[in-house]
Image (tube, rainbow, N blue to C red):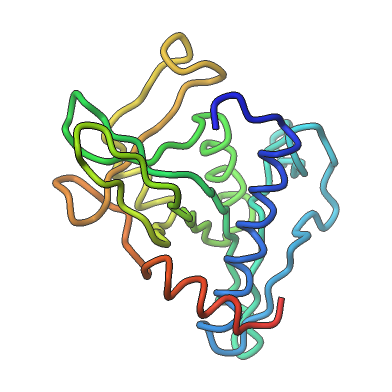
Length: 194
């Protein structure tokens, strides 16, 4: 995946968004998933962005979920489709998100007062040292993730703006909850209308 083109990454990410949208529609009663949460935002090369009251722009999460029965239960969803990474120093599997993007999701949450949830579609297990990578659909809210950062890689270590990392909830200090395994995830989302 390291030498993957931007177009391939975009296509893979959009497929993950569609899968999670279908999964949410089929598992949260009365939900409507908007795959274009721009709503007055600004298009930019990094994705749609929201103008903030104090100035500046913030990346908008991928999806907005509306509950027809309760408009106060609306929330945003950011989807990441990538495998867990084995962190040799800690001896745990971790997921990571670019610092700048994650901080933007938190700014959108603060500005809109709508919860932001991050979903990780973990596929393509790698096996360093004989350890099979976890797979499945994992999630946590932006607040849970912010409180549960176990490692921060700097821009010089990681590139871009650096990276925050989290562990699975079954590991010490972990916050990523396994929603379901890949087989169930694909079975449910295939049965849903996208």
